[in-house]
Image (cartoon, rainbow, N blue to C red; front, side, top):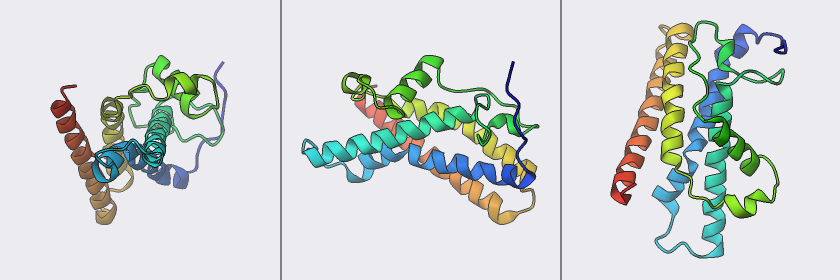
Length: 178
């Protein structure tokens, strides 16, 4: 039987989307590291450390974004199901992917030694995340902020930023032959 939780207040719902954007932006950390900061020869311990930190930040936030589309499990979870007129498409990670990310970035396990450096295709994960996020942004803009020009403009800027980053990532994927 599903657990019952108190419904978020209208103010919490109206502001909840900002938390989702706060997850989406750092989900691109690994890409931004590669684009702006990764030196050509990044074999130093410092570069390995920063690359791993950027990757972990991306994976942790991808995991959080996916959780938004899953059923609520804690009283203060922000979930798509709270937005009654939003057609929740469900999670974008498979159960296996979600479990693997949960084990690798949210828990201190022995698996980290073996699996953290696995090549993660953050482009594909972020593409799937954005495919879920964009309709939610459209819903929020149209349901909560109609006529509020500044917020509508901010949402449009967000969408443009993420589409630009995904387009740049796609070009890198083609260049790499992935």
